[in-house]
Length: 264
Image (cartoon, rainbow, N blue to C red; front, side):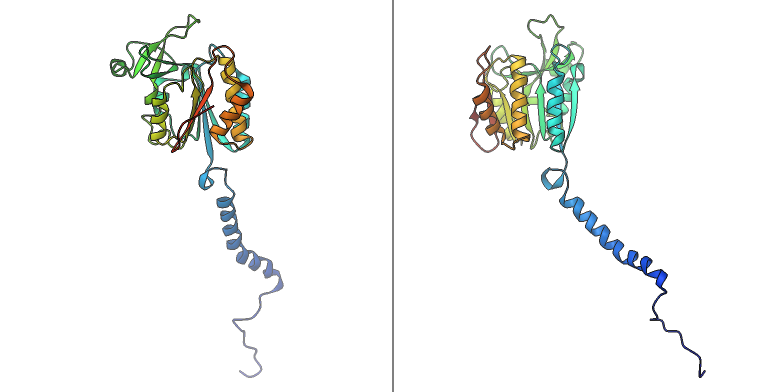
């Protein structure tokens, strides 16, 4: 009818509605930016994934060193790692065999070559029993082992080549630091770990004192994750500063994937 104003579907909203409309328009943009930021700014792992480390301290009951554990854990956490710590009797054969999916593995454990020096064995913290791991005992995958000079009851020792053998991913892309005696005198073990996908392996050329191993390992970790050196560079610098073990004369050795082993 003449004189009657028609309402337009394109008419502007009242002033009080503008903030609501602006929020509705910007919300999808905000969500996309937030998701993109989370993707690009994740923890310092490959592809933005969080890094993880584990410390197996089977020496805890006899030779505790809380300062070492706390210092290493702090260095790693400051670099974005999550850190798991297993102590004493919690370091079982099953744990050693199922070990996997860690970027860094620190084995604060005794180790020793077999009597014929053909195989390296890593000591667990689990007390020995002839009724456990019977098949593994028959096949010499695990053995009874004594910690010299302590009078401590015997524990299970696992053949080192079975470390992480029952894990889905094993030690793929892991850096393994074995702090025990003779842990790098058996190159067969180091090479097998690398063939299974480990990124690097660090160990000792012969017997080593616990105190010196703690000091050297702490320096290697500080150099790797504090100063950004590669595993073998960190080992070389550590050996250059500390030298060999003053008691036994052993030195750290480093093996890395797809290259010849390098000795510190």
